[in-house]
Amino acid sequence: MKILVINSGSSSIKYKLFEMPSARLVTKGAIDHIGEEGSEFANHYSGLKVILSEINHIEAVGHRVVHGAEKFKKPVIVDQNVIKGIKKCCTIAPLHNPANLSGILACQKLLPGIKQVAVFDTAFHQSIPDYAFIYGLPYDYYQKMGIRKYGFHGTSHEYVAHEASRILKKPLKEIKLITCHLGNGSSITAVDKGKSVDTSMGFTPLEGLVMGTRCGDTDPALITHIMHKKKLDTKQMDFILNKESGLKGISGLSNDMRLLEEKANTGNKRALLAVSIFVYRIRKYIGAYMAALGGCDAVVFTAGIGENQAGIRDKICSGLFDNLRKKPKILVIPTNEELMIAKQAYNLISAV
Ligand code: ADP
Image (cartoon, rainbow, N blue to C red; front, side):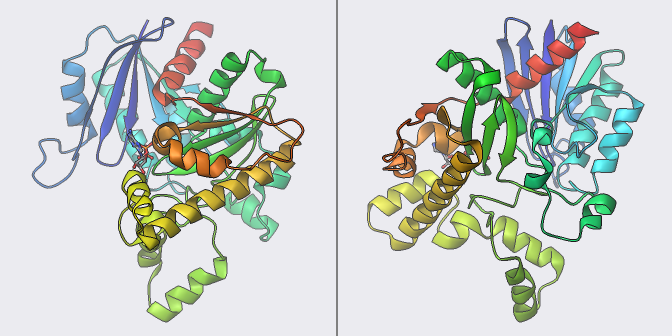
């Protein structure tokens, strides 16, 4: 069965075509600048039209959808109800869900009768217990506004957890892992018996680690303090926290960890500080999740930094487990979110 996997972002569409169940990658590609001035693609529909004109025999489509809130705990076949549900989640994921939905609606028009499956970034984290997902805020904010930790990168954490179980030859149901997805956006997940039991991102992808341009954990009182002092509105503050902070904000140089590692190694103090903060925050989370899990079989590194930057991995792991009787293994596993989406779409469609 040929399954097209689509990751439809605000101005881009990335796609991979898989033959399932063999998982053979048939083709892949991307288009950018959708909706931007001077672009040949006015919207997702016109972009997908061009992509689909070059691909034949699609039997199903798997869509990455960032936010499924508490409604979508696993992948679903798209119907009118699902579309309504994804639309509802747009209010808590205004940057991502509308673009994901545009991709789904465009595919419905361009591939009538072809089954479409929505796979949610948040779904893997729906197993997190309430004591780990409720914030210390008035409880009715959770009940009335859905304010809680959701977590993201779920498809990636789930994929590497499955791979780790295969590599370690230990059933998923018996495994304890700490999975570190370290890219431009970064998150860490505690996996117990193959299920997510805690994760560093929160209500939005801003919480947790220091990332390329996102601040991660910070004192919430700072936000109102800075807004007051610098006379910023919510939009401006949001921009600073998401786009001007993290590695870029600390170093004053870049969000690119390759450049920062190089500069840090040749004596640039701010680059070294950014790298040190990034590493220290990850070490703290690993320590916290070791405690939450009561030990773990392996720490898994994935995504751009996790897969490729051995120097950063060494700094994170240096001396971390020296005093433990049972030391976790360190694994580097390339993520493949698109393949995970294709597998989940295939499994769902084959089961009906
Ligand atoms: P995202 O998908 O969140 O945009 P990536 O997983 O592509 O991010 O990771 C980007 C980060 O990984 C950057 O900081 C980049 O410098 C770093 N990196 C290191 N080596 C590589 C590599 N070979 N390819 C891509 N990114 C890399």
